[in-house]
Length: 122
Image (cartoon, rainbow, N blue to C red; front, side, top):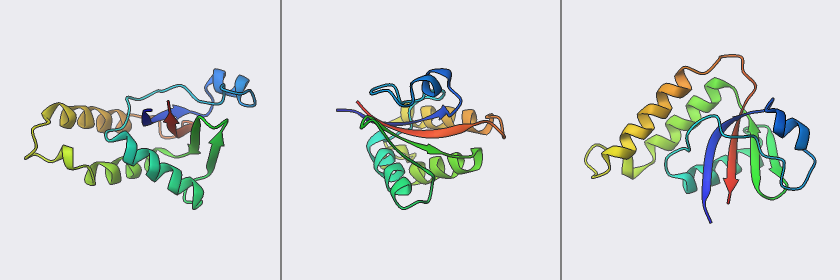
């Protein structure tokens, strides 16, 4: 089982059309997966369940939280700061590069887009 978090769009046509169908209630990935998917997955679910972010479970395969660009950036920075594999003294420079690419992608997002964070369990 893989636990991942990524940025999606609430206005994804497939998500909108299949929102109430089993297995169809997941926005497509707009971004790469967040580093340390397991920790990010459980933190996003916690934020949804504690109402820090509006959202909920969708057909038992994902959780979707409506989030602004600023909320997505804050979530990303929190996850990065807690990831031991992203520290400069670890032997994982490729993960650091991937995190930097995702940080740049988030910074370039439209400010007023219909964004969401998706916690996917596959």
